[in-house]
Image (cartoon, rainbow, N blue to C red; front, side, top):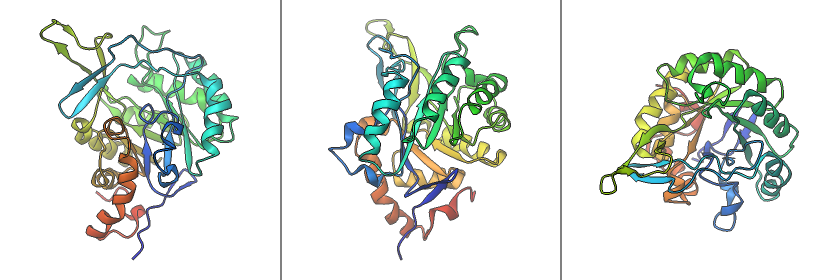
Length: 303
């Protein structure tokens, strides 16, 4: 029997639920010569700020057992390049869901960037990363409190009619209250989780491995925590969830969907194996056959 891998994400039909996570797949164009991008259900583009950013000083990557720490610092060419060059170039070769990942260091910057993305016809979904530090509030990330998360959500909601996902930080004590605040403020969906805060020390040099001292910890090690958070939020909220965090196989995608994810993002594993999303898409029908699953939509949130 032919397996149905399709899902619908806020009215957007996707050929499958697999999405390379923002920051791990560039703007999609970089891998166009290496694979058929149209095999992948969606692509979350590199996080974009209002102005171009060089990012943090090197070294900004540290390997860990079962994962990695990064402190790239949102290196990107700026919102105008995204909407005028990157998204249109990708659309010319890619038929599926294009997700713009928007970052900012003030509510005004978020709103400005989302308004720009809203006017770009090639963008299907806007994903707002609220793990950025709020420069007007002592550098505390917007996503660490329900109040500030709701403020960003409400502000960007006014600027777009496109499906709006809020990407949450897991570095909090109560992920559900923050997700529900975003839902109440107008979010159409939630992406979780972003990276955990981690650190490595070079014991020979007696100093942190990363120039910025701390960075985002991702990879296989965080998968069980991500599954738990996806489960909690998807069962507490009525809006869909894109699961993310430590996903590296078709089996992981199935597990995330059983926990409640409608679509599943693949992050750090792309940096280890750039072909992993293609491989997951190819392996999903085989795993579905083994598990006697005919339609992926039937397993969303069954646990």
